[in-house]
Amino acid sequence: MSVSAINARNQFHGRIKEIIIGPVVSEVDVETNEGIVVTSVITTRSVQDLQLEVGTEVLALVKSTEVAIAKL
Image 1: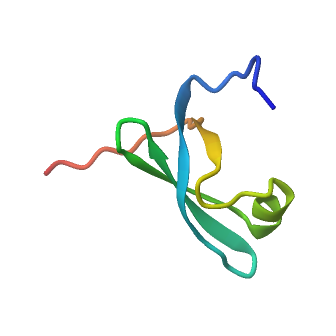
Image 2: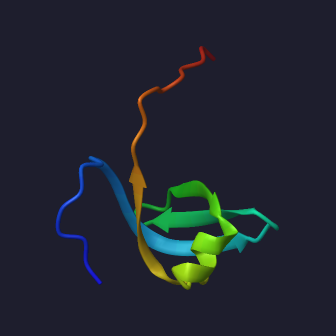
């Protein structure tokens, strides 16, 4: 399966590093080719429907209307 067009501009190609399954939502850690880990919280049903497993090649899509910044 390939994605030919999508309006999310922030896209990270990688592989699933870890999945923490919960009763309703699950955490999916995606490690990018650059070694950065992006975590997504999605429904457990979506994890099952997409047949996601550790090692699966995925595209993490980030679409947000707000980005918070904290001063260090």
